[in-house]
Amino acid sequence: VESVFATATCSSSVLAQYEIQDNATMVLTFSKGTLVTINLSRWSCYGYDQRCDIFGDSGMLAVGNESENSTVLYNQKGEHHSRLKNSYAQRFKNAFANEMDAFCDTIMKDTPWSVTEDDAIAVQSIAEAAKLSFETKSIVRLTGVARSVVETKKEK
Image 1 (cartoon, one colour):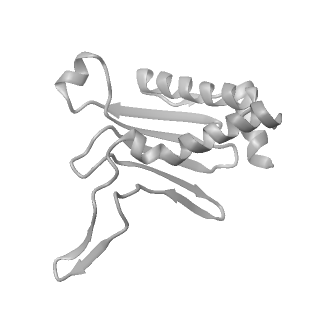
Image 2 (cartoon, rainbow, N blue to C red):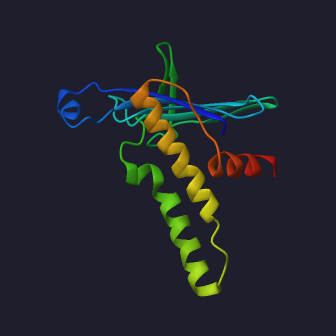
């Protein structure tokens, strides 16, 4: 990641008292020009909305929302889906289970942990850059470990 730009707003006076943002957008720019746009919303009337679109030279990767079920009704009024999953636990149940499996394999089978120290440093650096970008309302350029680790991973 070469640079980060983040912006956010708060639509709730209660959250605003605690300086908590409930809608955010972050743009990551990679050295070869790839853009990653992350849109986040803490709450919406149709369920918890979070999306991630990654655009590159060879195409696009879109991570969409999960609905409560896969049923879709098509009729003269349009296309109708169930509500989006509403809680963090609903949306990330499988991820938590996979993390626990990996942790147990690391402890019991001496399997290498899939997340390295460099991975953790890179992610933390990007998060700190996003916070600084939001606070200063400017693009933050990454240097040092975070950038070199992310770029090395990207090239593999």
